[in-house]
Length: 372
Image (cartoon, rainbow, N blue to C red):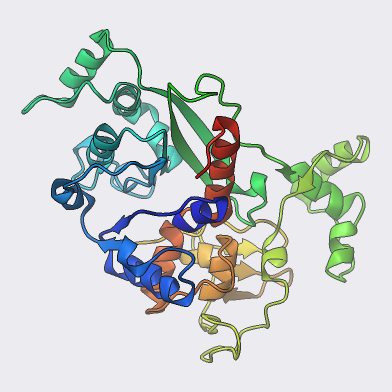
């Protein structure tokens, strides 16, 4: 998220992260390219402690973050608001303190499940009226009720943006939810049009099985249409070419990278070390190379099963290298990931896709007429 927003034009006052491996990556890349952010801006600290120790109230344009999603993830224990990893209270306290013009919170779609709907609505209500503060020992639903009854004018207009990363050109099927707050004194606070989605599945299928331009780009013969897609492709053949650009595939993402060698680093390419032993097992069959990759996930130990594998047309498999996983998340090749593979893959899997963060940020800057 930090890198995508930096590319959109924001300059970071602070990057607060409690995970040592993640801060190591942030600081390493600050050394490689000081124009990104300074090492001093990276704080390895619990954001709640940072907030308590904050003496002055800085004037900022944006507060952005991904409050830990394990409480709401489909892969987690689904504890939601009672999970001690729920960081929405801390995130919202920062908004009360700083009242920035823009707020961006990213999370997993599981946050919107019916079982969590009341708490999710409570989060939105707090963002809408952050000045209605919780009281000591007040239960969350009591605070929610008080916010709803409050006559305080909203300080933010709140929007829920569902983003499929492939729809904006990321070579990965990765659905995420963005809660966007625009302070009500800003131009455009009341008519946010949403993020432009200019890539599509239909355009990819058209390029692959109607025009064959996809295979021509990769100097490959056009294969037969997979049985599961025949009806859809037949319909596309009777239509005009879909507007916009096609989804980008895993093959697109890996274009130009040398094939990694198991157990060896690749000269001239950081983090491109081949990993042996890829195999299919239940519900983990890898990502077909001619389709957007499955979502890169963090996993309990940093590498999550079949999502970190490539599946080729001949049914052979291999693990993604760190560099390949980074490309799937739209990191540039100049961005490096020091540390053990298991830890680094966890960092990449937990990250917001760079291009998604950049697109959301550029859209907000343009719509609200802000200079970051």
